[in-house]
Each structure stands twice: as structure tokens, then as C-alpha cells.
Length: 53
Image: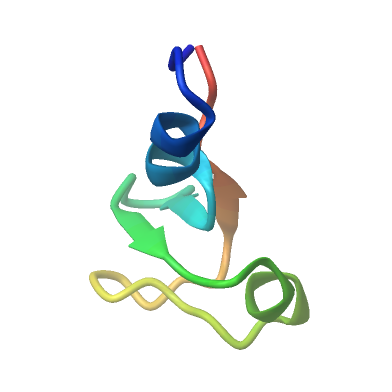
């Protein structure tokens, strides 16, 4: 995990990963939950938050 809160925000805040093609997308949480955001590569709306290791 990141040592600074600012670094953690840059790495994980509002970043989602497409479940189908694994591309990363930066978008607001509420728009993703509402289904307004889709993947740029494959068009899927199945997104998950970026995993924190």
C-alpha cells in the first residue's frame, strides 16, 4: 500500500478495471454505480474497483 494518503488517492481513487478486457478507467464512483460509464475498448459496463494489494 502507498505510504502517503495523497499517493494512495492517485493510485486507487476513482480508478476502475473492466472485468472483460482488464483495461483501467478513471471515473466517479456514482456514475459507475449508476451504469453511465462503459469501457472504452470493449463497451462493457462490468467494472470493478482497482485492487489494493
